[in-house]
Amino acid sequence: MQDAPMQTEPDRSGFGRAAAFGGMFLAWYVGLAVLVGVVGGGEFIASTPGLCLLVTGTGAGGLWLGDRFGRWQDWTPAETWGLAAGPPQSRIWAAATLGGLTLGVVGGWLAENVGQPLKQAMHWPQDVDTMTSLASALTEGPLGWRALFILVVVFVGPLFEELIFRGVLWRSLRARGAVTSILVTSLAFALYHGDPAQAIGLLPLALLLGVLRRAGAIAPCVLAHALNNAVATLLALTLGLDGETSVALATGAAACGALAFGLALSAGQSAEPGPRVR
Image (cartoon, rainbow, N blue to C red; front, top):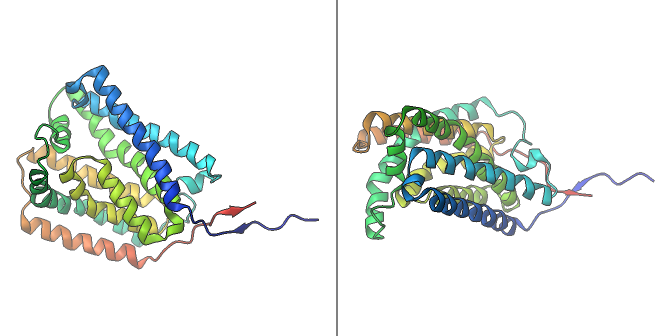
């Protein structure tokens, strides 16, 4: 007798799976930060070498956890990492490029004009400022470490974070629908960066990344994320910590970002393979 063909079944445990993976990843992130801070000291963790270690260590640990989690859930590697969809449409690549180049400017304006007042209202400690630490790591210290940190920020970080948030976490939430997946992964991605101002500034990019992921493979998400970080790095190097985003520049960037959203939404939603029944 031949085996019955492989079928699909609805997966109702999306939030539980997302919470399980998110909890493991958060524990790793916090544990690594505490370890680096205790061993290296408070000044080291905010230095360029310390941030390089923290970003790469967090990402590498997240990928290992994601691989273990995917095997536990009996997912294929393509399912775990968002590689199961077909090649992205040209409009998706265009949306990723346009949004990656412009939404960081919108995010900068939001961080300055919404995020910073929110931090003051929350009585956020003035000596805990992730954005200042990142900008200082890019502009201060030995040139070799700064160059390495730029590579981490522009290439390594986006790849690791997209595989974790729009890969494993997205796959965990897929049964809950695209809207829920976009909102939850976007919020988790923003909060992961810690600083309230930075989190608010990242929301436009995070939402676009979710819409891009809805349309198919994860590669356009990595491109948009890398371009955003490259623009932010360039602005930090040229304008420093005191540079302000003008309303006119933010408005123009928002118009371009809206076009990017339109292109991504027009591509529709991909049909990735569903959970398997053996």
